[in-house]
Length: 179
Image 1 (cartoon, rainbow, N blue to C red):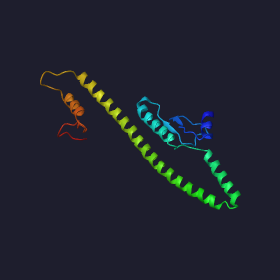
Image 2 (cartoon, rainbow, N blue to C red):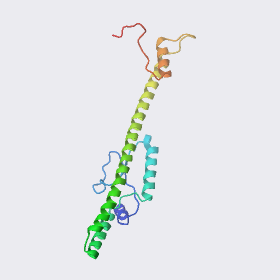
Image 3 (cartoon, rainbow, N blue to C red):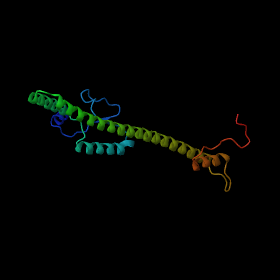
Image 4 (cartoon, one colour):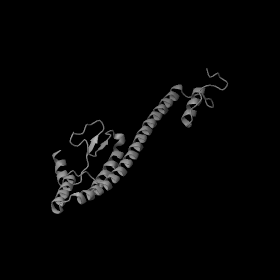
């Protein structure tokens, strides 16, 4: 973490990256960090988010712990010069309010992104499950074998309907009691 401390002291851009399931060190756990999935399925999304974070850091949107020290020094100097720290503190408060509004906006965007990411993960899992079901159905179709020309077994017809439709296939024959 020595390198991160140097970047903090010099107010240089940085991006902290962690992996899901990994605990960040205590001294950086409260800072903004990208926590990404290591599974290859998500590498392209991770690459995009890291590139965006780097672009944001390069644009000046990164944590600067030394700014607080500079603000306090400016307030103390203003108080020593004029004898009244209130105007400097009022200006600092106005700046902090502006910063807070910016942070709230960013937090709303992050929440939206996280909900989109969760939805994407759920859809990916659902798609994988559907592919597995289709593969099982195809294997079952192969095991049934090929019927004589012009004839299909009832099982083959139902499997084909299942594979060709997006709607669930009714496995009961018409007129059959649902019990």
